[in-house]
Length: 378
Image (cartoon, rainbow, N blue to C red; front, side, top):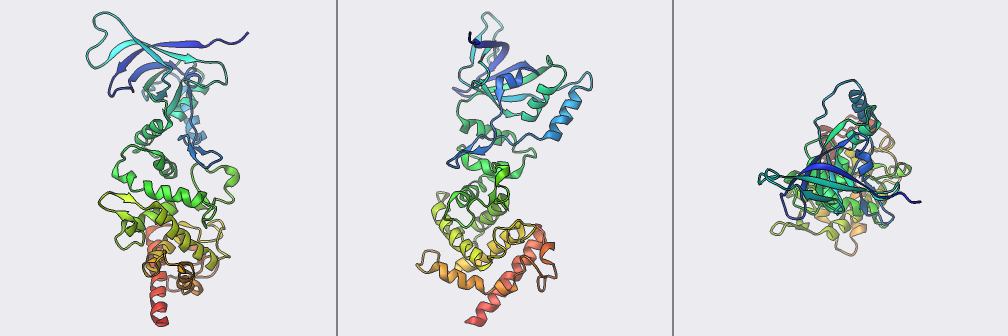
């Protein structure tokens, strides 16, 4: 004997904002939220393609909500936002007064299947609340729900980023999701989309010096010993060079069409940072606690030196790798990535922090040394 699909019916209001994606306002009980909806965790498949969009459960935050829900009579006005499968159906009520031209009342039916089968909804916003509600003592607690119909992960991801744009989501999570968002983005987010896309390529390309070394929101715990560089350090390094007129990556932008030569940027970065890796073998690939080259300050400072080096050496020339290495070799004796104290800066190697003032001091020192030694060599 097999379990039957049990339709869950709720009174609902339907709001039509755009064709094909109606909005529904209705209620679920605390026990029903996770029976109806799945959490789409951000991760990578075997081909390193991004799947999902939700951050991991934050246990402390969940427990705080549970404690509040179990504290006695409470008000819980924050709606859970769901993306509904098109398997959900809505039948409008008949008779006068069922629609005011803005919303239509009716019955929403959600097909709840057997255990293990795909659920008819995904949580776009409120996963911590949903988890807490499922563990709260009062199972019949009514929860407000806003839902829209969207079968595609891309639309769900787009709404997730927009809903959480003004909230304290981990920057790494938002940054990793941006390349997978197709719709137009606010300027603050759009400027990080291409750098994040390049960051993905650097991390996934086996020929890249950063292969599997960049820690992203989707990085599994068992890979953290290899992923030693924060993705925001790489993204910020790329973004700065791409948007500053003096940056070596700036010419890879078409200001008229706003198109970006991702292949060209990837090639230039691989050449330069492979040379950095070869110049500092004892500092490469270690955790930031053991090597400030892998630290945000090191990545950003060497990124600014990159702007100088690649303005002199064209990455497209056949011997570019050799020429870039010769340029970097000029500063090698003056670097203190794993031991010692930085000259003129007066900071021990492990005292350098990823803050604007120290990044500026370190990058200025490296560029000054490079310019002086290059002039002396000439």
